[in-house]
Amino acid sequence: MNNLKDGLTKLGQTIYYARNVQINLPGALFVPNSLLNQFRREAADMLDAARLASYQRGSRKPVADPAPVYPQTHLSFLANVYNQKAREFYHRYGVQLIDAAYEAHEEKGEVPVMITKHCLRFAFNLCPKQAKGNIKSWKATPMQLVNGDEVLTLKFDCRPC
Image (cartoon, rainbow, N blue to C red; front, side):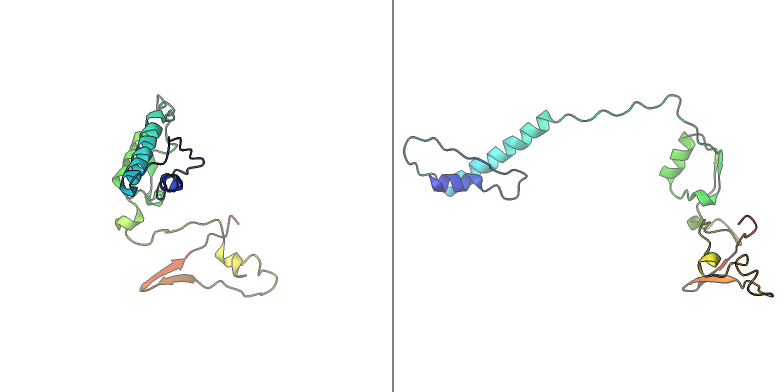
C-alpha cells in the first residue's frame, strides 16, 4: 500500500501537490510502476482539463466611442515614434503628422537628442547662477558627451532657471 501511495504522490514537474492520498482497496494488490505512473499522468491531465474548463476569463472594458483624442496633431522626432505599430497607435487617436524618430536618421544637422529637467551644470557645481558671487569673470565651458567616435555637445538654456 505504501508503494501505491508513494507512486501517486510524486507529482514532480506539475503545478499540483498531493496533500492527502487515501487508498481504499480490498486487500493488497500489485500494481506495476509503469501503470501507476500512467494513472498519475492521466490524473494530472484530467486536472489540467478541469482547470481549463472552469477558467473564466476576465472581461475587458468596452472600447471608448468616440476614441479619445491625443492632445497634439503633430509629433516631432522627440516623440520617438520609430515603428509602424506606434505610428498606427497615434493615428488612431488623431495625430495627423508624425516625424520619424531620431534613430531613423532622417533629422539632419544639430538637433536636441535629450531634454532633461535635471541640470548637469548644477550637479557639477558649474551653474553660472551659483557662481555669480564667487568668481567674477566666470564663463561656462561647453560640456560634451563622448560615445566612441560620436561627440555630443551639450547646450543649456539657463534663462528660465
